Image (cartoon, rainbow, N blue to C red; front, side, top):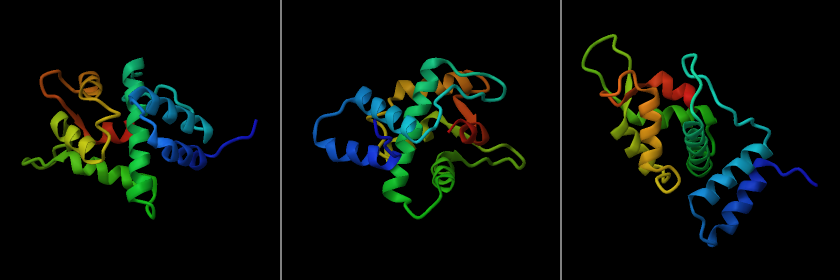
Length: 151
């Protein structure tokens, strides 16, 4: 069985995009592409804490969506540069000096919509990330550093 590279797998998925793909099919394609390039899709620790399975699945969907966006719009840049710019677009400026930069649920959903990932990553998915990682449940905000480590 020949090994497929990430790009050939992704190209095949994009070329076959004429068939209707729902979120689960796209997610399965993301998992196959990720496995093909040898990246392990296990739970990551964020501030010494493992994520739940559903949040891990959402994070993997987000990584796939960001990679697809990067391949279309940031072809000359490093993946880390693309990720930083996407996250920076979601950062809410603080009026107080020396405060950590934060990303709110609303600003993150706006970015997800802007990169065309709203069909893959639902509002409920992102809500799960923010519920799990927010400093307190009422703020619905995560620090920029946590988001960077997550993705």
